[in-house]
Length: 66
Image: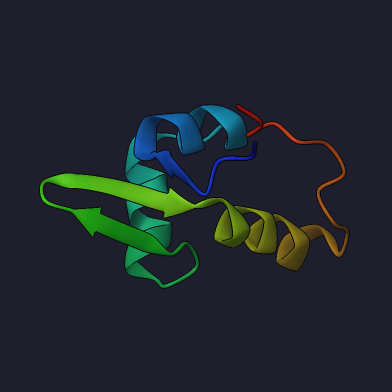
């Protein structure tokens, strides 16, 4: 099964970015955030789309597989 959402910390780890950069990307609309109470998740599809927008290539491996 593949995850649909990841935490800000996990997104930062996978993209090798800081948590503050992840928040900036969410504020800019480049990453889609989903709120469940106080918890913020980022959609895996938006992370893959952000990488594709910068590289022109699809993400080939599943770093988010459960």
